[in-house]
Length: 430
Image 1 (cartoon, rainbow, N blue to C red):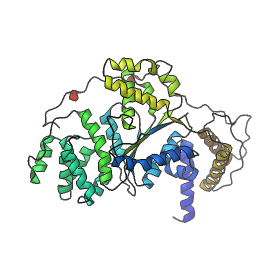
Image 2 (image 1 turned 120 degrees about the horizontal axis):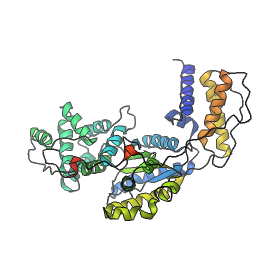
Image 3 (image 1 turned 135 degrees about the vertical axis):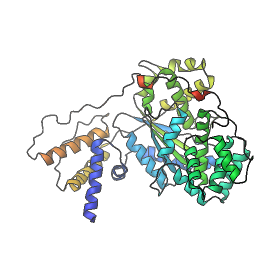
Image 4 (image 1 turned 90 degrees about the horizontal axis):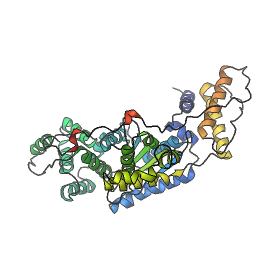
């Protein structure tokens, strides 16, 4: 492929991604975010991860808020690329039916599957594990082994599987794969761990106490940042998108989700994860529609509602709601940003489709007009001019409705009955 063809393909990818409303990495690199203050805050938080980790602390993360099309996902994509360039592992998690915020086990599975590392194509925990294996005699790996074996803060499954992976993983790929899947949220029977330890001449070295599935997921989310740092990376960044979906949960689920949000963002004094930085995005109307009004008004009664069930969860939920209220508002695009974006897009559209796009009119500039509306309007106008050269604009060609947030309770997200593993399983189970 020639350089011209490569440039044209890259330009077309940018235009197609923006037309579809998908914040691709290429589009982000070409257009930027226009959120200099938030980028600076994020870079400062990244720099604080290592300092905090040396003190066994987690820097408190933050949330950004904005309306539909304001650039929240675009900004998180930028954050993802910054983290990779700065030597961090990073996971981008979108809250959904399959990834409910209030369920640590499902949330862990999504975060582990989405994990990216610098200079790697593969996703997941496997690339981190491979780095660890190459450094298995490094002081950082040995220090992690000591911490897991003697500090008493983790179930001994983590010490045992780390020993099995670093001492036997190189010669037994199937065993290594099973350990990595365990670190990614899958179950691994205690009997299988004991067998692997015994085959490496460490029989009886690890006492594997029973543990609930939820607690195991929470410990895994604390273990992974330590594993990432021992592998030679600076830490693990967790980017949580579409937090507003919590508004469609039942009241109990919302309360639990607020608590989990506070946990991952490092706002709970008693539950920190050194090496982890979490940043999330939420719709700017969440506070007015869910925390203060609508069908819920959670700020008024969520704490009382949860206190009758679990005081610790009630306190965590309060922290989660506080973080949402203190979320940082995305700046509206100013004239300089709009003009720069328009000029760049016009050039890219011309390169993508090998033509000379004319000047087109802009949507009416209001204080709340999101960037996505401008981008879609410009691209649509150029598409029409290119495909229908004789087209004449009407008086208001860019009148288009933007989706509104829906905070009605979703029956598909209703509370589920307690899982069978709510009580500790036998040690031989997992």
